[in-house]
Length: 318
Image (cartoon, rainbow, N blue to C red; front, side, top):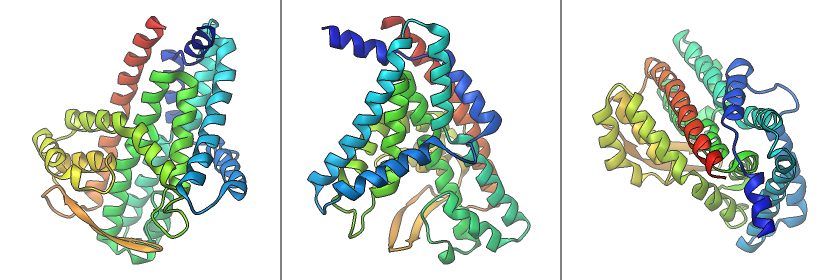
């Protein structure tokens, strides 16, 4: 019972901390050097040298070690501050700022749109690796628009909504566990010869953590988007055909809300996928990318309001 009370205090959320951390991300974005998420990636890479084997068991152990150690570290940092409101707010704000990526997502998306609108296709192509893992050399202008827009949709959920939701549900440990899982999925959750088995646990754990946030993001897209009926229709009809149980929800909702069509041939450095069609409108253009970025901003604000409400309710109960 004592251990349970200790853990409950450690995961107590701070609504004010989430707000301040979000505002910091909006004001300054990601730090250009020494980003904590990059540090997590470096530690995971170092650990992988000792844990890698071509098996799901080894990958599960690697995922558990990474996520568990970060979660425990977050709990150890948060527990002594559980009854100190200002200190808990400051810690939550710092961690929230560190794990959010919404402002950087918008900046890179705007840069891609700027390049396309000035007919600088090579410049836009160079920015694509900052958004997603597509092979930029395989992308023409319409392909760049689609890749950027799909990435904006998916990462609106991954980079902002998911982190805020888990910060509201589980405080500082929730923020850190979510971002660690998301980072591991990006690093090893790939369907290729090296990671198909080793990265399985990381990919499935990330899927599990995003079940709720992706659907909250979908609801916010429906609420904020210019075509609510189109967003609902595309979500209900198309989302389940996407290879990701979560990205499909957000991408389909964006497509329906904006009256565009996403999906199709998707080229990665080591494989090619034929993604199902999401939405039933036209192919996206740079104008649609701008609209998607504006919608992403609205969804992020809605996610903040939702997270603050959840955190306030949770804090009163804990």
